[in-house]
Length: 380
Image 1 (spheres, one colour):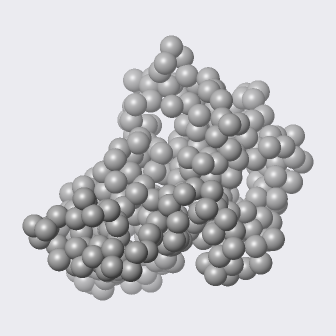
Image 2 (spheres, one colour):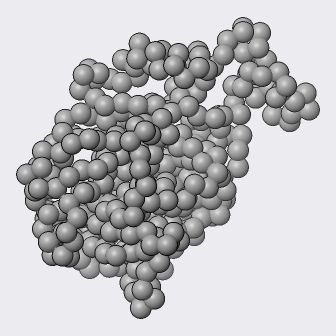
Image 3 (cartoon, one colour):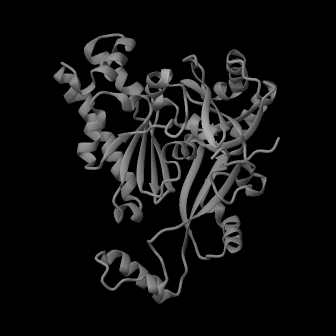
């Protein structure tokens, strides 16, 4: 079985890449499996099938990987899908994405330097990981004198550029992506047992970017607010710069609402999404929802502040994904506090589907970013 780890990266196995007319993406999450089947007809991408199947609550992450092939095989059979070739994602929490600086600008020299220096950035034995890299084009730390503007209002950038010129150092920013080898091996083994073939594996944030941004060259913050984890994905001029996870997410919010109002979790979940910041309970708004929004904004800003690129470039938009992002009033709360245009992500944009399914399809948008992104591999 030939795997393409991180097919989103330009330099990875590009000579194996071939155009497809049919593709299946499967997002194996912590609470559900999302499957999307797409086909390309006359240059247009059409939706053939999609499904979301809940995973039983008591399964550990290890058990989900062990039984993933069996679960996906059943979904394919239930949908009468004959294809056995699947694209899957590895969760960001099983990966490490790091922006580093290297001293060379030549790709072959960069590769040699990374091979020698990778152990500094990857905190496990390199034999236990699969890793790759991509050069990041950044206006920060550029060392070409013709690019230095004497009238540049941002003195910090100019000073750093001049420092590099004085030292004669050439710095190149590189995105280093690594994932645990045993994780991909466990998925491969499980899918083999289910008589399925993994065409491509990539870290889920790359799938999300592909689905939501469709190659846009802008600067974005994607906030994927799920049940167990919130992912912050920073995209600078179309390039991934960071992906960070925090444990603050929807399930914790549901628990707090349940305890404060003394209602069961199903009722609390409904109240969270449907009422949200319009709740009649001031206690819930002041003690639960406002602190939740404040924490998300604080963490988001903290991640952005770690990178000079985002300090000196205005965000075009904040894009929301994940089931909890649908909570009434949350988008407006984030938008007001971040002072940035905030929108819901739509992974179905540009994909043809039956008009009678429009309402149902769009209502499922928050859950399908990764699966759609996976299914789009090699179709666009």
